[in-house]
Structure formats: C-alpha cells, structure tokens
Image (cartoon, rainbow, N blue to C red; front, top):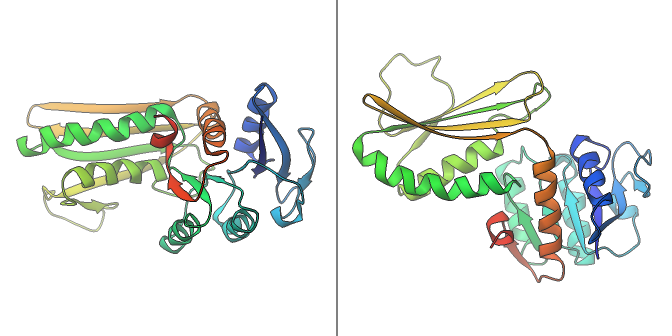
Length: 251
C-alpha cells in the first residue's frame, strides 16, 4: 500500500485524484492539505502540511507555487518523496526543487500523462529530420479559461525537447504583435489559447513548403494526469534522493 498526502486536495485535480485513489487497492490518501479545510473525501485536511504528524510514503502536490516552500521543507524534514505536479514556477522555484532533490526523491514533470511523455521523445526525432529540410516549428496550446499560467508547462517542455535535439538553436517567441518582419528560421513560436472547459490540447506544428505535419495530444479528462501522479507515487515509494520525471516512472 502506498500512503499519500494530497496537497491541493479540494481543488479540481485533488478531487479527481481522491476519487481515483478511492478505487485503487494499492494506494490510499491518508491526509490532505488545502486552504479550504473541508473534509470532502473521508481523510483529514490541514491548512498547512506541517500540521500533519503521521507517516506517508509520498506527497502529491497539485496546488500552487505559493505553497512550494512549505511542501519542500516538509518533504526534506520527513524524507517523504514528492510528486510535484503544480505549474507556473519561476526559475528560482525550479532551482529550489533541484536543490531539494539532493536530499529527498522528487518526481517533477510538466505533464503527468503517458501520451505527452511519449511525444516529448517523438518530437526530438521529428525535428532532427525536418528542420534541415527547412520546416518551421510552432507550438499551440489550448486550456480552459481558469488556467492562470501561460504558456503551459507542457508547451515549454515540448519546446525544450525540440531545442535540446537541435543544440539549443531556437529562440522562443511568445508574441509577434510588436514585430513587423518575416519569421526568422531559428524562431520557435509558442501560442496560448484560453477558453471554455478545454482540459488541454497541444499541437506541435512542423510547417514546410507545401506540406504541414502536426503532432497533437488532446486530454479529454483530468483523470489522465491523476493516473500518472498515482503511478509516480507508487514508483517513488522508498526511493533515495534524486530528481526523476515521468519517463523514469514509465520505464
């Protein structure tokens, strides 16, 4: 049994994961953390993770960068492995996560779905073949109207995978409204759409002369991210300090 602390338990993803774990015979949420301390799913809920005094095998954090410091402090102090799923982190935040991983096991992934993590590898091979043939690369991501950060962490992860494969030749361009000139060949455009109840859609567009290849991932339910985070919690149980991602989980 993998005993989990769910940070952000009363949010959309927290409730989705709570429902998934309730049907999982190999996992159990023993405590939740949320600004709203209402007990919705049968486990105690605390306003701050430091208030929990029990023992857990893993922490799943699907909340906000605002609580990162308290979550990292608790994970390090108690040596509880962490699945960090929140988005919108600054460079300083990401450095804190890297430093913490020297003392406790951390899974950090821009997207917890199996499909997205497969595509992160696929786009590397595709860009190596198409970029030398003159194909331009653009990424368009779409999410619901409540998502605060833009572009999405997944869009940036896709861009980073592509750029890594091309020896970091690309410059990310997020806005062309103030520029009046043809597109540079070394641009990698990233666009964000926010509207309605779109769970998540990412298009990686390779546009050449007279042909376009698009790799698309569409999430129809938040459950795909929840399933990935639960798999990561089971994977990381008992692991020593280190930085892991979903590709390690899926090996």
